[in-house]
Length: 260
Picture 1 (cartoon, one colour):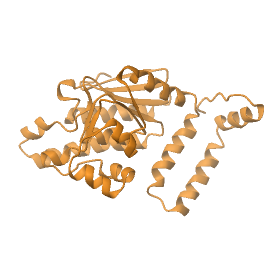
Picture 2 (cartoon, one colour):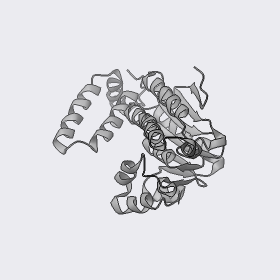
Picture 3 (cartoon, one colour):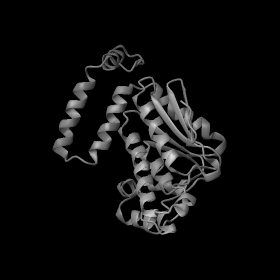
Picture 4 (cartoon, rainbow, N blue to C red):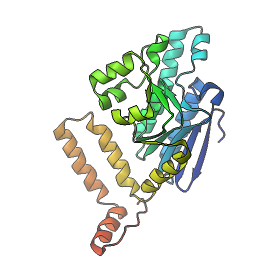
């Protein structure tokens, strides 16, 4: 399937989704929202895909919602309602798929663009990247991302960065706990490949279930979550990968996982 606003490639069990509206800093319009949801749903269901990379073309990752389209909309409230819902579908798809999604932030990530990156499981960013929740700067209440930021940085810091649209660097994001790794632009691709290679050698079912448990952990009470962990561990113990893992451990060799 061909897309107007993004590109998709699958190679060596890795799906790379590239936002491709560089003239608008890869910002969200309704078309991108729909196409991104479709491709995320597609790769999420593809059992051959072990890892997903989300990146942007040009000078940035994603500039958020397309402000020019917001300005042109006759019914701005209706437009923002529809646009945020489209973005939310993408966020939910990222968090719901039981496989790692890596945001490769090559530059600016603002507003919903930052929210999209934070929806991913890991973020690798170049040193030059600038980020901001951005919404307040255009007179807009945040349409996405407040929960992600608050859960990571805490209430007071969240107020500081969200309520003032404070711009921060990749390095600052790293120290806030929002970013996993900050690298030079000339080592960006190598850093992404290195992280991807780790997941390519791990048992995908166990990794996917671990992601599910991490997401459920922020919703469940302790007793409920312990029971879910017990059931999930028992489920994964029935896989071929678990048999291979414990056999390799006993035989003192590296396991070879097959995702079964």
